[in-house]
Amino acid sequence: MDSINIADLKDELGTLIDRLEAGEAVQITRNGQPFARVTPEAPPLPRRKPIDVSALEALAKSLPFQEQGAGEFVRMMRDGDRY
Image 1 (tube, rainbow, N blue to C red):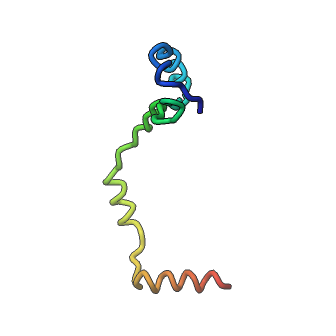
Image 2 (tube, rainbow, N blue to C red):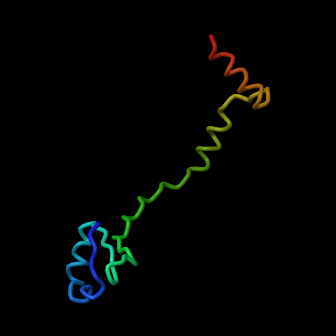
């Protein structure tokens, strides 16, 4: 990450914006000491598909009923992995 002095910031604002558009982060210094970091905005997240509740309910109804409790079921799965 490159740095720019606050005194030069006003004169180089156009250059700073170009660098941000290119995806570069820039550190701003005052008297040689960093005090701020300017970073480009993260790209927006892709839109999620809405959940099809009726399809989810149909899937849940199609699954077999589990007779034993969760602890017993996990123990059975672990014991099956040993052999």
